[in-house]
Image (cartoon, rainbow over all chains, first blue to last red; front, top):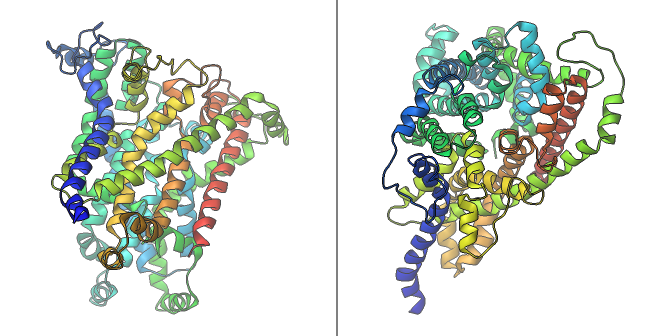
Length: 282
Length: 310
């Protein structure tokens, strides 16, 4: 009897309390970031902490965004991020789904080897190859260029893996039927396979978008001119220029956090599915 | 069992046979399959495989970024590397950071996933709220934590409320890696709890019900039903978290740049500095090879761990 009552009443209450504490601590740094972004310079360490500034300084956002010579041009950086991420995402989705389809629906000598070679790069971080990749960019004359920001980033084994898994589950009969009707291989891919695969394609697209939009290290290595900086580089430059102007640094950090938050809310299912897929081996 | 593990492990003979038979259905088919894979494979060759081979080759040379001519110098880079106290230090820093960050990630993200898996009203809200640190841009993580770790920052304010003396997080050799671990896990725990949550939701309800009928306590249920079912996922989490931390560049580079006194100089920061600040490409490549070996070893050990269970 006592246990039953514990189950029915106390347990949910305890769980809510626990969840609230956990969420509170995880969100606290973000609250502080946003709250600081609305404070006047010099007030950011005042005690007791004013979580909601009595006199919010929205100008911090205007000042930070409008930048200036040393602080950067965030409209430009945003455009660069959109261009780079857009190209990478589209090309990544196109090429990984082609490859996944080829590997799943065809048998050819060496297919397994090609797949394994690509999958093996999942454990290959940029940090291992950053030096020779930089030299390769130099050889191609791609340092400080859009090509350099885009092309080396497209190849990603995760997309190949996910698309192959998906296309393996497509009914073979459907593909064969279309082919017997005389449709060409590419035509079958684009008119039969792709329309059936939007969940997988969106998952890969959202994943590629997130990774590219968020990447700091590669752009940092090959971008030299201000005109090519992406948002993460802009944030870093701004922080270095402002050093301890925390309200404005936090304002720019908040702004920089918005796009991925929007992506998460718009495509929550696909964001979660992509992350979960990195752990599921089915 | 499918996916990466199976692909690496190969298939059963029967499936290999059907594969062979299929490939005889017509030569044009196989040809097309190859064509479909080709475009991305070319990119893999150019921007993944070629750089690895090049790093391997360069690690035996005295190359610099500017001068295309270089000489083979045998193992001298590796000899210098392992005689360099700073390099040995960076190996130690990386190991400390990886082990210190990964163990709590596994425990805490599983705990969070168990909480988020409860059937309660408004759980969706908690799932969204606790996921937030995972969607903060990676560059914002060190910048935000630099502020949190400020001598008068929120972390020290919180410690002060508990009666603990303020800590000089980023300037104290003993505190800097624990600080990194705090910042890293703040971001990784929400991320990996999603993977565990997906795993928990994949456990069939019958298993829970059966264990309930058998009178198992929640703790027994966790020990004998949940944990064994999550074992494969747990090892994937260990691998991904380890790889993430072992390569971690942004957090160390932006938060401290390796300081104070190299106390937070991780291997990837060492590589970056050797190549792009001291312009020793061959030397940096040798360090990259060591990092690659570590990655491979960690992955193989973990794959062995879970294959022996299958």
